[in-house]
Image 1 (tube, helix red, strand yellow):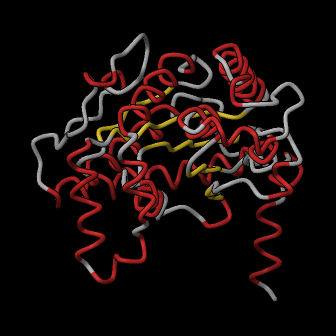
Image 2: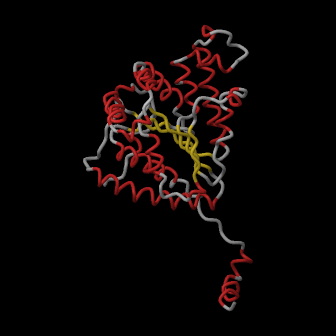
Image 3: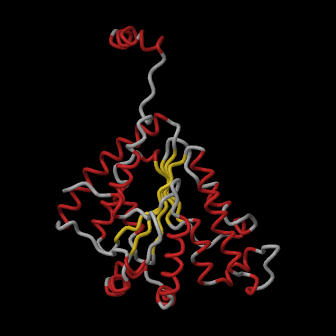
Length: 292
């Protein structure tokens, strides 16, 4: 297969979300796409080992998308060949009572990957300009000093949030975290098909919630918010990539390819050299072990 062209997916200017691609197959069948993913993720796994040994960069992978967009299965398939010590996944749910006692970014700060590791955010800090924007009443649970009613949550409030999020990402990027943000762009028709599959297949029933249908009715509101997110927070230090999500094998391959290509550009990521004194005595150490 031809290498993935990153610029086809990277958000580099104003976009209309209705014009973004939701389906890709590269003219290939499922088996071909899965084989391409296997090769890519093996290379990515080896690169992660080097990143871990190098110990100066962390990688933050942010996944956003509508319900059923395929975030969980993408994580499973893309990172399958990683050493378990090298990747940590955080799935952010409704904030806990302890999390509500801090600012909304606190729980994301403490979940950031250490140098040498990948961190994957399954749903991210962007929920705070997404779900809360569609449901502004949720903000009341944050007990903010300048918000006494929903009417206080105006455009200036959201402007500040975007500024805070962009600053958060700029700060961690300047301190060695490589930030990748993937919007899994699912069509409304494909979401319908996947929700029906959850209802029809007994083993998938547990994934279904009636709330999924309630949120689906707000599809246009969510799409508007996602468009705003892509346009206001795709930066040089934290770019967004819009990934066609209707075809899961292709989506996984695209994400893995972008990660591999972009991280490989950092030529300083290499295994550290042994201390010269230790290196000079390797033959002696080997001999000692062989003569035991």
